[in-house]
Image 1 (cartoon, rainbow, N blue to C red):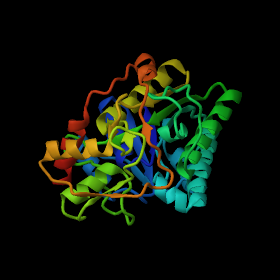
Image 2 (tube, rainbow, N blue to C red; image 1 turned 30 degrees about the vertical axis):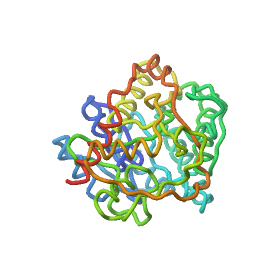
Image 3 (cartoon, rainbow, N blue to C red; image 1 turned 120 degrees about the vertical axis):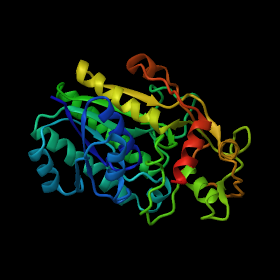
Length: 335
């Protein structure tokens, strides 16, 4: 019998790709999403890729009865938790909304899992828990901090999970500290550009796509005075297909061993904003006019991963490069 895996926020960018990867690996993924930052037709597009119906429940983690109903209706083996607000700039403007959604929602979910003796849990964390890193590349043993309310909620999430596991060894928790996901599914049906989002995107790739499609006159580059080779911010970008595969490997390891782990998911290589612009032009043939503006509050200069632990514990190594991310994003944006 296949194992049912609940994906909270499973209709979002990372969740949808992970759904496809889990289905390919023989699991039965189930989406639970309020669609606040996801396209309503995402389940239908996933179905085109997988060739099978996509079970999906519309609901919110702050709605305890709705959450309880999902666990009553399905025999859930494990949970992968994506559902969280995630825009750094927005978190600076409305920190309480972020704390309520990301932290209270997590606790509601864990309580319901506890009620049903579901103990395998993969947590969508972030490199933001390292704050402004002291050393690069960043190992999982680096001091934890935060530079913005979004990062604060991810750090709270990790600490809540650590406390739960410390008193109940039945919990098997995989904490995945993402770096910067980019790219699109090879089908072109899933990409990092939610069509129903009222707010402008903050991540770099969706903003580049808007300019390439003529929806914006230029790309805003926030800051060119960082202590980096060209003055613009440096990030570790990981292809979404690699990131989704990392979730499958994490879940398989939890179910196999019953032991938790914390790993970075990145490539171990940093690219600046200007390098990203150049790579996108090379991959797509599109010019990306840009303007330098002041730094955004909450941003840091450089952030890229030490990826050795993911390789050693999970057998994970990124297979796709920057040009793959840019080319797949541009191809998907034209579908």
